[in-house]
Image (cartoon, rainbow, N blue to C red; front, side, top):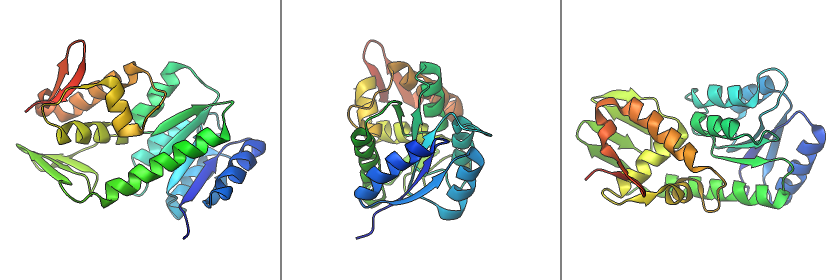
Amino acid sequence: MAKETILIVDDEQDIIELIKYNLKNEGYAILTAQTGEQAVKIAEQSQPDLMVLDLMLPGIDGLEVTKYLKNNEQTRDMPIVMLTAKGEESDIVTGLELGANDYISKPFSPKVLVARIRAILRRRKKNFADTPDRIKQIGEMIIDRARHMVTIEGNAVDLTLSEFELLSFLADKKGWVFTRGQIVDAIRGENYAVTERSIDVVIVGLRKKLKNYASVIETVRGVGYRFRE
């Protein structure tokens, strides 16, 4: 059975070959690019199932690539794993805000990278297969998992992947209080190395976009967040 197609984007050929070798051994089909411009073109034309994206690229950088793809109807649902030597919290938070699914800092373990990719693709398949409750309505707000869309009073709300997944997760468990760590595990997988601040940043951005419905996400001081019953 053929596996998914993965686009590897890095300006270092040695890195590309290392990742390519390990992913091909797992049965994945591989596409490659060495610039941001190439990455965008291939992503639009070939519609890969996932992208491994270096942030430090010639031309447009990885953050710009992420921003463009997540604002493109054709590619917005494609998972992105950031691969970068830039370990500063600000870069990680920015990438996650834009909609990246995961990040791994260089130097990295190929086995860890493969495991992260496998987990993301497995969750993606599960989300597509889970038809029950794929549409939730709260007043005039509708969360449609199948179409990956949120509308309020009939108007589409432009959410990043992180914002959409977080909102969907909390809405599925109305009234339940979750810590930041539990939210991270639920929407990105266990042992995902992300700071608590990034969850707070996603919440702030989500509330701004929900406008009159911002209050459906409640802060429970000293614990985390919940979706109001």
